[in-house]
Amino acid sequence: MIVVKITLNALSDKHLEVTQTLLSLIKTVGKEPGCQNYNIFCDIHDQNHFCLLAEWKTKEDLDHHIRSHRFGVLLGIKTLLQEPLNIQIYTISHPRGMEAIEAVRAKGVPHDKDIGQFALNLRLSSPGRNVSGKVTAAISGIGKITVETAMVTFDKAYCDAHKGFISGDFVCLTVSDNGCGMEKEIQKKVFEPFFLVF
Image (cartoon, rainbow, N blue to C red; front, side, top):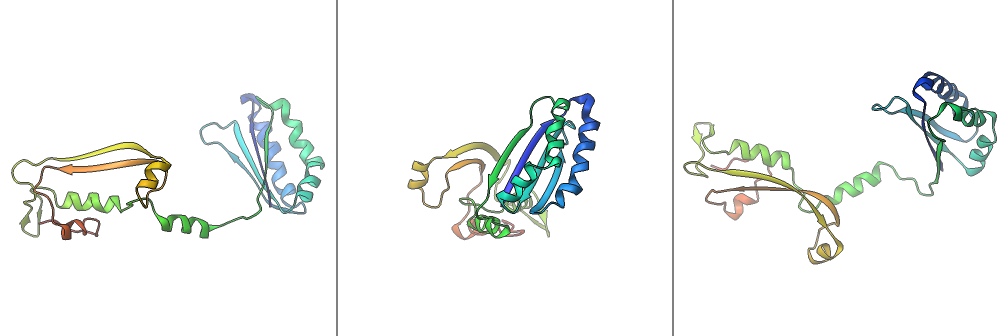
């Protein structure tokens, strides 16, 4: 499969003409032999910025299209643009679908847990919270729970030394308190739905 990505920036006073030209190509090019997909997108932040994405079955199909009058129409709008067309052509030998996403997500992020569930449990278990007539006592008196975030980078050396870690940039969420601590059995349950520490 061949994927063609073309980006273009219309002159602000030529937006309508560029839009009309691009729209005229959608149906006709989409019916050309070997064209599997032909879409045009407009940037929601800049209405003069367009992206054309097309998929072609073979290089020969794409070559036929490039020699066509229709592609000539696209090249002909250069006087309506702020800069020349940016054309990128990608050859994809092994397209992958949702199974690739699921395979990566199944591996998870190092120590990935349901942070939302943890935060809810933390709120439900907060000092003084009355649930079913019970008052929490994990932090006696005036307690303090601190939630901090930071950007961290795990390089290859760090990942080699810490089994299960993946190199890259991540957000680190740190939750601490001045409570009396939790037993190991309770620590294992903090990510379970609606687990309360009483």
